[in-house]
Figure (cartoon, each protein chain N blue to C red):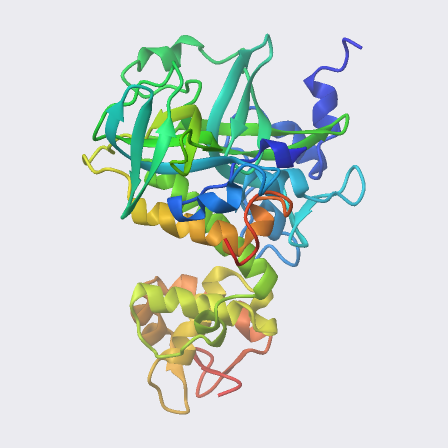
Length: 280
Length: 132
């Protein structure tokens, strides 16, 4: 029974196999990061999902090794807020009971014996995690002997209490996104040709959803958007023009264009260095 | 089980839906400013509305500060309507810029928690869908 240490728990972790061993250590930098071009189904579950504790307790797991699902959408990493009801320090971890008004869940933070335990205490002026205080948790949902807990990467005290209400609204917005789809303004996506940041990122977001572009790199997508949205003759744009519009080196533009060429999304016009978007 | 653990966020206008007898579940969560304290009673002001709260021995609430209280909805003796018996209270302090948490934000949260109840509270507990 003693062997039911946390190693065993890791191996029963819900989804990532080899990656599972890397988490639970409270070390975020090494977490697998998905790139937007990561392919189908790959990035959804690695995205940190804001949730209520009730959603964590209600999440379905089709079979023991499967991903948890909420609103039909698989997830692994979660973030939530709550009030700490109890703190219990054990040899290998600190267990917090966290209550956000919708339910209570245990949050375990594993103690890294290699780390210098005094390091945190040196910054004594910083707010501490205390009972009845509010905290923000980032972690991964795990099930062990039919009991759910969250393996925390980070747990920190809340200092601006607006964050609590903000989080509950954010969790609601994400829930509605998955159950009702994106807000209509985003679904239609206006192609205004506006070059300010917000508009560009929205265009990238919407064009990412239209099939052909879903598997290209962010770089290629930016080249595509530049070609699509810049004023040009039917001869398209020269690589130098694209580079100056994007504020990027020519070599980078070539890389992105190469990808788009190979997919037949753009084509060469007067010479090998001038491209136009096929559909236009 | 999670049902008995949850504490719906409400405004004073919703107290009746959680009154003793009207609902099996009457532990609620409210946010407001303490405006008066007298003996074991205090007034919690939430926007334009207010509720009488009955303090326990551990509650040390100071007038003018913002608190989140968790408590049971009860009938106040002498037919003074509904109040909340405090089970726990936590001060919501000013942030680093010296601003108090935004009470309007809390009101928005109360609204969505009842509108999209499934991710917050069980069906059986408190309130009537749409009619709270």
